[in-house]
Image 1 (cartoon, rainbow, N blue to C red):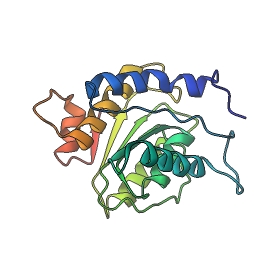
Image 2 (cartoon, rainbow, N blue to C red):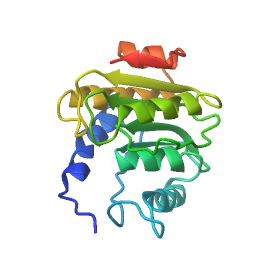
Image 3 (cartoon, helix red, strand yellow):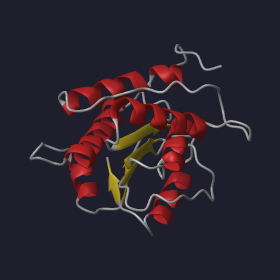
Length: 193
């Protein structure tokens, strides 16, 4: 079982808070606690994400959704991003397979990865970004000395995720954006953060 006190779960609290503040009351920010740890053939975090999307539709109707996830949650967001109603995807230090792909056609996608991450390899997520870019707008922000837990430079991860989500769900509406996110939204593929 996944515990609400796990570090990976706790690490997403500041991301959710930043999203809520950035949305200025115009976004419902919901955090998903996966039903089981890890990833296996019987039940994956994608199943949990699909279930949660159904709950969101039931509760709020057919509003656009952005999926944000870290590590395996980032992988789940990328893979569940093709579901109906998903408008955009953000993957933070996503743990992906070397040959992973997906169909995120028409869904702007942001991958933010620390280049000092030794758990989820940044080369894999960069290769995935290049593959996804064949069919959708993908931006990749590399943070030079950030590691997997996103503790060092955590505010950058939070800021980039929240700015991208707000811009893709609510529009840019003149809001001040960080240079990396502005560059991604203007079409840059790979940006240093």
